[in-house]
Image (tube, rainbow, N blue to C red; front, side, top):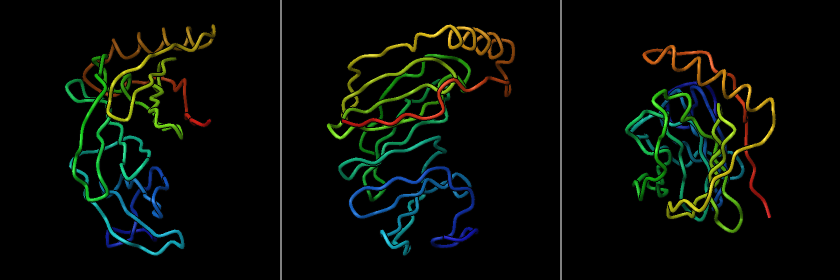
Length: 173
């Protein structure tokens, strides 16, 4: 797609994922999901009912991570028609940035959430049941986590400066 707001046009594409013969673009600028065939031909758009941070696709479902507001779930699961099937994962921090997650789904269907500003990874089933979580153990992660927690505590009401600890996650066999 080219830049714009019309069918097949993108304003601020944030992520591209593939599933079931579709390339799915999370377009932050247009608050929608755009579907393209493997050759790049536009198929359809789905307006999202809220803003999302990241996405993954698996078995005909789209998994979208929230913007981390305190009273929302971390993940919404939509079908290819845009119907919300379920939501899961509890936010645990008051500052939205600490709840931002990257998402990946393994071939066996485990959903992994990696918190961007914390050294924390969670593993869920595709139906949203938390299986386990673990922390990345490294002195630099500990130092940056302490800094991020202090920075966000000082500025609860507005944006704050928190350094990213985890930039992406990939799940494979």
